[in-house]
Amino acid sequence: MGKKVLVVDDEKLIVKGIRFSLLQDGLEVDCAYDGEEALEKAKENKYDLILLDVMLPKMDGFEVCQQVREFSDVPIVMLTAKGDDMDKILGLDYGADDYITKPFNILEVKARIKAIMRRTGKKEEKPDTSNILEKHDMKIDRESRRVFIEGKEINLTAKEFDVLELLALNPDKVYSREKLLNLVWGYEYPGDARTVDVHIRRLREKIEKLPSNPKYVHTKWGVGYYFKG
Image 1 (cartoon, rainbow, N blue to C red):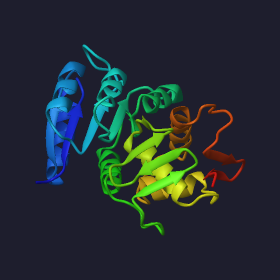
Image 2: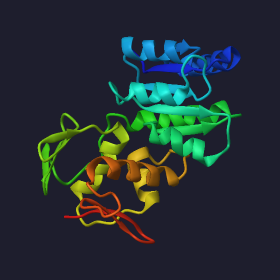
Image 3: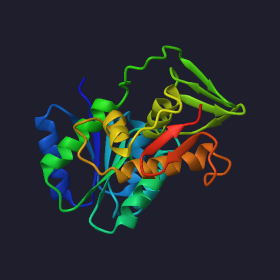
């Protein structure tokens, strides 16, 4: 069985074009044309990636993304016709892993999908082989990919977990945004380093009591991010 992708867009010609191109790459493709149908399919099937348009009938892409995040950490790439950065950031805040602005080149879409899939479920070689990491009052279970703080589980997306795991395995080591982008998203990833900033901010909002005064993930100004050992 090949990888399975859900393509969601109300413009049928766009869906048809993307589907044809992904089928050529040996991927299995399901299609949905409105938000409700997309959510239903995401609940009923196991996908390796969801390509999700922002402007959809019945339920917009942000709402679909937010609801999918309640039961799945499947990688989600948002498609947006708007060039406004706030829309892109908003998409990431709802739990998306990446965004692509319309009009797009199908080769760019395929490159993003391949880069994300290559990283999904694939772990970097790490010096620490233990499945359980305990840092301060945080416990990271690497095998089940779950995080607990003071015994309470914190729900992270796949990318948020990958970033936290990498930093926690290498305490006090400062990683630049570009290095994190390469290690977590992959060297082939054509996205923007600002994606890292958004994920770090979202991660802090989940794991820190005071995100503005973090206990775990710190900023080395002008250099990058590190986990306080």
